[in-house]
Length: 286
Image: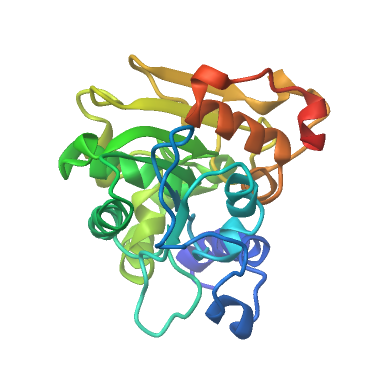
């Protein structure tokens, strides 16, 4: 086996294992619109929840499967909720979030405009998982998104990149390996610690004025590592480790976005801080 393949093989295996966890849907499931109240363009935000919520999926995920837990949870609490697909690569169905992240941010910009036009709202709130918690920061910082967004909630976001437990550090020893990843799946290369994309994104500060930021992380994250690299610095930032709220929560990277109702409760607190209630282990029953 060629040296660069010895690096890429375990890297690809971990990424594909994550993808299999995040995207369990069959073709029929992913093609069908979920009948649970989200992506309803007739929905009008209420006085209690005046901003629509846009959900931004992660790498290898899609607009349906990533949100089968959180979207109905929010709809049932009176929010107008929307999701979309971004970062598609030609010939790769259902596994999205793989294209260049700056281009994906442009897709988010277009989708937010669509949601605001449909709902009549002046601003939206964004909730994203993994890449979906980081990518919107490019939209906020470089594409004028701060004028259209009140809050960004990142669940296990790749804000400062990942070393996949140190595995990506081996790429330096194999010239051309990172270029290969960049060509095949640009978003993966963009999320490696020290990438040109992340250097640009984080230069001059993590946040922009006028937006509140919440990061919800798990210390058991095996994909965005080390997990504290997910945290943001700046005003209007709250960094949360889910185990500080419930020590018994064992969710890792996929589970915290897919089905962790303790994390979901913390999302609602971030969306409606005026009516926030303590997040505890009992929040799983809420």
